[in-house]
Image (cartoon, rainbow, N blue to C red):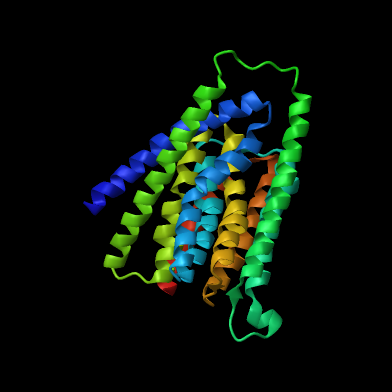
Length: 317
C-alpha cells in the first residue's frame, strides 16, 4: 500500500504542476507583471509549502535534524538537479534583475544561515543552535525581500498599463486552476514524503540522512515538476523564478518559522552541506552571467554535481 500511495503522490504532483503553471502564468498576464515575479512569489511560495509543512512539524516534534536537513537538502537539490534537468530540457533565460539581485539575495540568505548557526565558532557557546531570535532575523529578511518584489512588480505594472490582455483569460478561472493545482502539489508532495520516509526508515536509514535525501527530494519534487513543466511550456522565467524564490523561502520562511516555533539544534555534519550550498549558489550566479541563460552544458554539470553530492552524503552517513 505504501508504494501505491507513493505513485499516487507522484501523479498528483505532475498534474498539479501542469495546472499551477498554466494558472499562475495567466495571472501574471492579468497583473501585467513579468512572469519571473510570479515565479519568485506565488509559485515559489506554493512549491515551498511541502518544505514548510514538513520542517515545522519536525520542529514541533523535536526532530531538528529532519527540519534543517530538509531545507539544506532541498536547496542543494533545487540548485543542482532542478536547475540542471530544467536547463537541459529547455535553456533558462536569465533576466539582468535576477542576476543582479535575486540570486545574490539567495547567497546572502545562505551566508546568514551559516553565520547564525555558528555559535561555537563565533560566540564560544557549548553548542550550535538556531534560536527564536535567529528565526525572527530570517523572517525580517523575508519581509525585506517581499517588499522589494512587490515594489518591482508595481513599477512593471505601471510600464505595461497600456498592454491589453487576451479576453479569454479570466481571473476566476485561473485563480481556481491555480488553487486546484497547488492543492494537488501539496497533497501529492505529502504523500511522497510520508510514504518515502516510511520506506527509508524500514531500510535502516538515519534521521539526518532521511532529512537530506528522501524528505528533501520529496518536498522538492513540486519545484522539479513545476519548473520542468514551465520550461516545456516555454515559461522559463517562471521556472527560474520558482527555483530562486523557493530557495529564498526555504531559508527565510521555512527555517525562520521553524526556529521561531522551536529552537533547532544544529548537527555538526550539516556545516559541510551549508558551505556546499553557498558554493553552488555562487556557481549558479557565474553560470547565469555567461550569456544571460543557463543552457544544456551548465545544466548537465549541475545535475552531475547533485549525483556526486548524493553519493557523498550516503557514504558519510
